[in-house]
Length: 120
Image 1 (cartoon, rainbow, N blue to C red):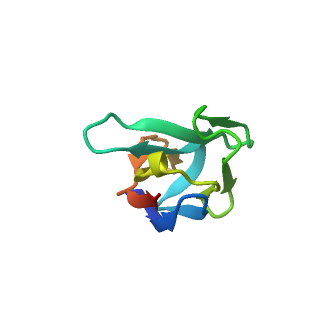
Image 2: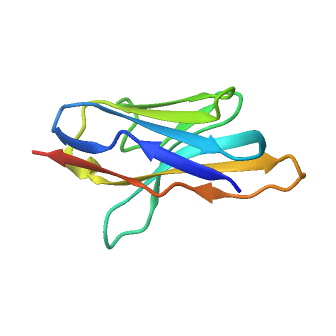
């Protein structure tokens, strides 16, 4: 069983910063892509940023230049540094990963979500 545990959400004023962390636990052989998504109530979940095992990143246009994704392959962790936060960044942020397990199987896993609230 693989779990993703997020931390770092909270309340921040517009213009402030937050850093989200996500740790993958379980019988993980390797994780390829990892990423962060967000969801506003009543709207579909949307991509925020992804990162490959080799460090290639992809960002939503709305966060380019403000957010930065990074990962630690040895620790199976992914991070999201969020700067210059705006009220429209308010959402539940979800960690995502597609790990390969020691039994040869692979799966897609989501974290439980962490709430980020940006006040104006």
